[in-house]
Image (cartoon, rainbow, N blue to C red; front, side):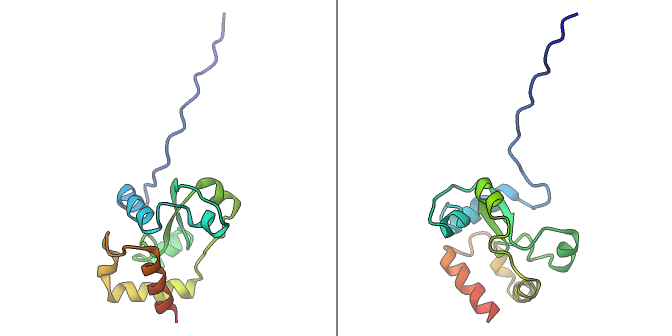
Length: 132
C-alpha cells in the first residue's frame, strides 16, 4: 500500500478573538502610528505592521483590573512580528501607569472612539500629560 504525505495546512493570518472589532482597530491604530512598526522605527528601520501588540500584557488579571485600557489605542500598537519577537518587552507600561490612564479613560470616554486621535504625536503628548 502506498502512503501519500498529508497535505500541509496553510498558515492562517492571526486574528485575535479577544479584541473586540480587531480589524477596525488594527486599521485605525496603524494609521495613527503612521503605517509603520514603532519597534522598527525606534531602531532606525522600517517595517510594516502585521498584528497588534498589547503594551501591558493581555492577561486575565489585567483585563479585570483595566477593562477599558487593555484594548484601547493607548495600550495597543501595530507591530511587525519579526521585530516583536526580537524585542518582546519594547514599550511596556508599568501597572501604575496603566492605572493612571484607566482613570483618565473613565473620565473622558470620548478618547476611546475610533478616529479621536489623528497622529501618534497627539497620542504620545496626551499620554505624557496623563502620566505627569
